[in-house]
Image (cartoon, rainbow, N blue to C red; front, side, top):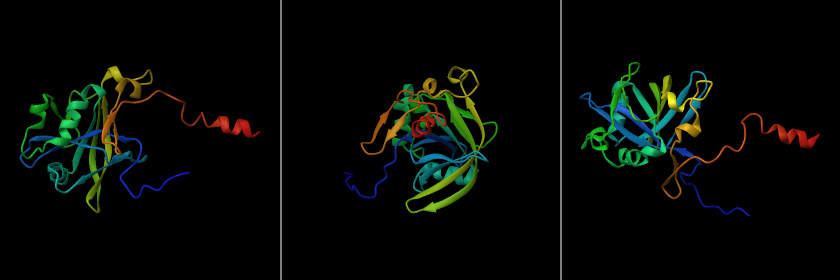
Length: 193
């Protein structure tokens, strides 16, 4: 029997993404977000939700752009730090000893050491209670060659992205492959015949 636990910010999994922006003085900044995901296929778009109080919020509004750098498990400490400190008070890239790389397509930096980056131009902004949801059109994805599969696509097992557990506020690595999407479900049809 299921037990009601009330309305909470629980969804599984949630990503650990690092959103890159420039502040009003052109200084690179980044913050960690978990309220994020794919929201449209055509055009390819993602959403990230930030509170107005964050330093990155103003950077996205000002520059109409942001990046999402996807950290591997090797950078979980740095990804967590980007969510702890404020770019208003600290140079997060310097403190984390990571490299801000200027996107050549949008007015935002990304984390050079992270294996995958999505470069996004701002399409829409929606006020939703405590958070503002930013919809960004993905104009390009850059990935380290070492994380690409034989088809040239990022391989989740090579990236080893960090997952955020909202309930216990912990980070997790990816699990094992349990089946091919848009294929494994055919087994249900086969057993009903």
